Amino acid sequence: MAQNVNAPIEQYHNAKQWEIALFSLNNSASNLYLFAFGFLTYYATGVVGFATLTVASLLGASRLFDGLIDPMIGVIMDHVDTKWGRFRPIMLIANIGLALSFALLFSTHLFDGGMKFAIYFIALIFHKIVYSFQQTVTKAAQPVLTNNPKQRPLFSTYDTIFSSIGIFSIGQMIVANWLAPRHGGEFNAAFFGEFITGLVILSFVLTILAMIGIARKVNKEYFGLGENSVETKSVKDYWSVVKGNRPLQILALTSALVKFLSTAIGDQVFLVLIFGIVLGNYGISGTLGLIQIIPNLLLVAAFSILASRTSLKNAYMASLALLILSVATMGADISDYETAKSGRFVSDLIGTVFSLTDSISTSLAPIMIGWLMIGIGFKDAYPGPDEPLSDGLFSAATTLLVILPIVISIIAMFLMTRYPLNKEKMAEIQLKIAERKNA
Image 1 (cartoon, helix red, strand yellow):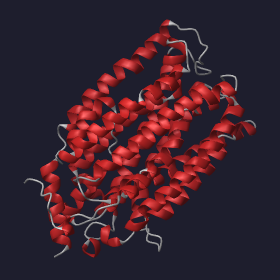
Image 2 (cartoon, helix red, strand yellow):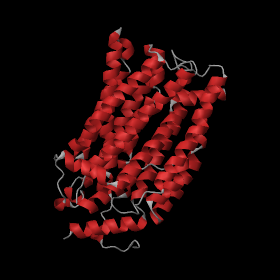
Image 3 (cartoon, rainbow, N blue to C red):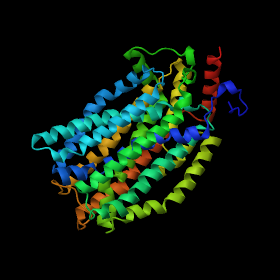
Image 4 (cartoon, rainbow, N blue to C red):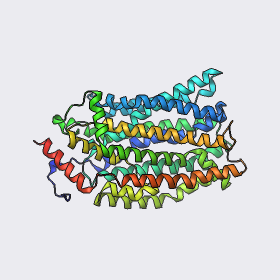
């Protein structure tokens, strides 16, 4: 069925351009912490004094605990109903929680003996919980923000500009070319004090702006079928959603693979290894990010046009190898698919599934790098920018820079060929939702 661009107004609820732009900052707010998390290994080994194996083990243990409680986050969020709506209170509380988690996490060096391990582990667990809450909102609020297939790609456009370019590219430039040199090129306690303070303040400001962006869409009429939505009460109901939603399964796995790869090649150990050790100039990592800004913007614009004219699936497959577009907007398609299929509005649960795979991926990446470093002899600390290049370091660099991206990209592309939500299918879904809503 061809998409009807002149569909009745009841079929689509639109968002204003500035609302989409502002709400995309919620992902930027949490991604600031993800960016800083890439430096955590250097803090843990260089400032606190943990061994590389200890850091990898603590990350793995906290990830296991987080994996146990993550599925409950979506269930909790599905039952949040306040006069400020569902999403804004969670965004605010979660961001404050993120600030508190980092205040505790990056104060570990102030404690003695066994208290260091306890504080570090508790802070890691708390961080994972509140991070999952704010990340889940990014995915869960997508169907509420807009269901117009011509508008949804705009979220990925703004998200890429603000997060991928604004935070990771420009952020790396600031760290590598300005902040690190201010502290003698070392990731010491003074560096982390200045770095974390600025990050926490900026993330809070972005969260407030994102809350403004979603404010108009807190009404339940934008939630699935509105008052006609089928209630989801029991664990059995939630499990039936996950078990019976094939697009969710495919996209969650694909997203996990891509997130794992992007986290690995964005990790500071990787950047130090490639730019500081192999190329001999850590500052290049920031300069390269600036050079890539214009080409990335052009690519984002091209993929967004492709998405609006065809489908998010086509745009995502085209951009997969370049890691340009996120899957946040595609999660909204999956939520609408479930609404049309069962009458349930469970965007929070679906968002939690993505948050779970996101958390697993972002935690496994540094663990994998940690074990890789241990395997080539760095058991007590991670290699710094002044480390001489060895055969082991070169092999590790080749694995992370060449082999890993090729393998993951092939698997992800194969999975996306099985993803069923194309342009025609989404047009059918939106029409079905509109008909059931107005029945």
